[in-house]
Image (cartoon, rainbow, N blue to C red):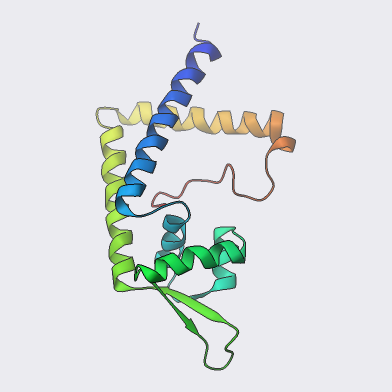
Length: 161
């Protein structure tokens, strides 16, 4: 019988290795903490977003967002513009360089995912997803009152983010 003593060390070890690779690749691509999420949100938007909208969507404080946007603008990945009719409102959009950067990140993540899942058949993947979903349900059933309510933890992972 397989026990939690066999499952969790393997699961946590795999997650740690994936996280370490992700952080290493983030440093290489210049997508440090927070930057990738902001670029992702802007890339999926069909219009420029106000800084307030962007902060709400990214679930970050406006002050923290301003710091990230300053770096992104300095690197020519985003452009911030004040509205002509209300100078208090600043809209943010991706630049061509920002969109290109986003597309490279998405391509790299798909490559990484494909390599990680190589040789695993569809039935095994479906079983894996079923088990993950069941574990999530158990987590919420037994520990839901202890989970953060801000929506940052336990979110569904976006396939491109």
